[in-house]
Each structure stands twice: as C-alpha cells, then as structure tokens.
Length: 85
Image 1 (cartoon, rainbow, N blue to C red):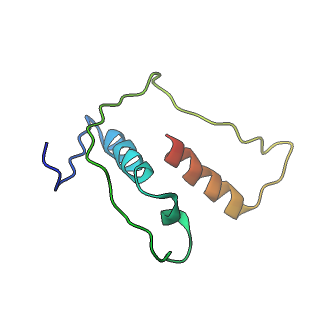
Image 2: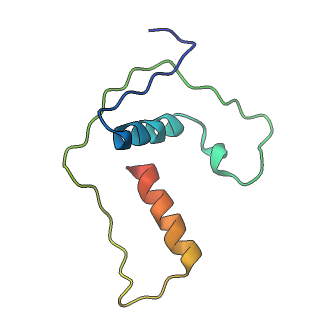
C-alpha cells in the first residue's frame, strides 16, 4: 500500500460514489462547516477498506403525506442519505 495515493474501485458507478462517501467519512467533521475552520488538519489515515452492502437496496423513509417539509429540508435529507450510504 502506498500512503501517497487513494484508490477507489467499484463494479459500478454507484460503488465508486459510495467509496467516495467512505473517504469523506475519514476526514474531520469540520469539512461540513460552511466556513473554513482554522487549525484543522485535513489528513486521511492510511487504511484499506473493503466494503459492500449487506442488502441490494438502501433506503430511508420521509413521510411527506402527513407532514410538510420545505424543499431545502428534502434536499438536505437526500444528501444525508447519500452520506450515510
């Protein structure tokens, strides 16, 4: 393993997408702030991760028939679904 590179492999484009989500989870939580944080080291540890889903489908539920959600909330919810794979 070479510590100076990142390799993400997937059989399909969605596998690469979820591999990128895993890579983002290795970074400090400060990457999700709207403003750049001072004195935060953006360093990814040297790891090898082999991952695959336990089930064919991944899902979460958002009950839009009984509750109203603003468009911004729904878009953020979709982003969070992707982040948590």
